Length: 478
Image 1 (cartoon, rainbow, N blue to C red):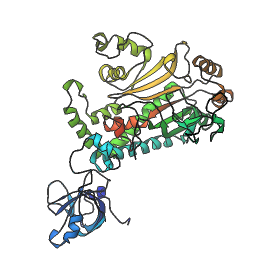
Image 2: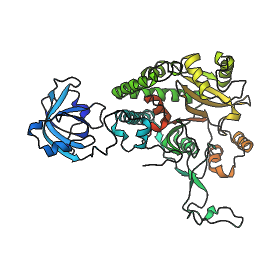
Image 3: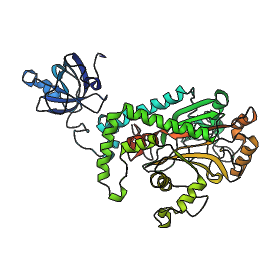
Image 4: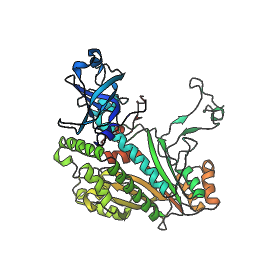
């Protein structure tokens, strides 16, 4: 079964004159003679030429859109337009039939909403073939970048007793019979009788556990699924998504920003090198989509220009305070073009503000640092001014924040004080505080939402289109 040549390899033209076996799914069958065959290795089909006069009519009827077939023949240079090579079929075997009356992915333009409803088959379209090949390259490049730098890949728990940063509603984990939940004398759920003997949930972040690894292994990273039970039906939110979270001992905020900038450039470059055809296809797709928008809503940069924009520019580094001054004095703010007007220091920046800094003001990616401590998490290192923390966000065109990180608060007294201020129970995080009791050191880390990265690199507009099987409110299909 494995003796086959992939279509991507055949289209290079290096197999002309060689007998090959090719297997894939029928995209189209024209004039009872020309099969467009695709195996997922590339968006491009190979043309199979059928000698229909000497082929069993019963077999010809089974060559339908969506059918899986195996073809053996000798590769020849094509005389027809649109392809460099083709294969006159010596033998054709139907591996799996497809009823053309019922197969939903017909050779025509389908809406993204329709394809979401048929997510089990949308991989067979050019758009989603390209997206998931790019996603694969990005995932591998992240591992490669960090592995080449001596990082240890750490698997942090998916089931946990902590909500790492109060990031939102969590999914509870239990093996209770939901029709007969044990209660205490006071009427509360008796978690002591549950599987883990305590209240547990699906993780919202592997960061806190990642810090434990960094305090012994120096440089670690997590790359795994995280979960948020927010009832958010937007194009930017998922209930299940993947996160990359490096944590580094003996790093300060600058080291952290340097690593994040280098990693983003590395993985974008990997996609441009390895998925050139896919990105050119997605670039064209986005250009056609942009034509449907009003002029004032169109992006100034094409997809490929946007990716190059991030590679060819050093990221601008400014403090939150400097950013507030720029935004407050900007024409967009003065003319009330921002939906959320910037009135003063302490405002939580929205995507429109982040994009203004990147796309209009600096025309470069931006790293913002030193945010007000009141709008950031408890574990971020407090700066000497008493007002800000050593946090950083990386802002990209079209998307705003793509990376969030900080130098972590390594001083036990300052960390405990901050937890008290925010009402975070220290007894539940005793293990996290132990890292500050025994051999503490400066350390830092960041989080990169993988789907947000894929969204940026593919130019798609909805995060549900860059994960194979999206999970969102009222949807856990497939």
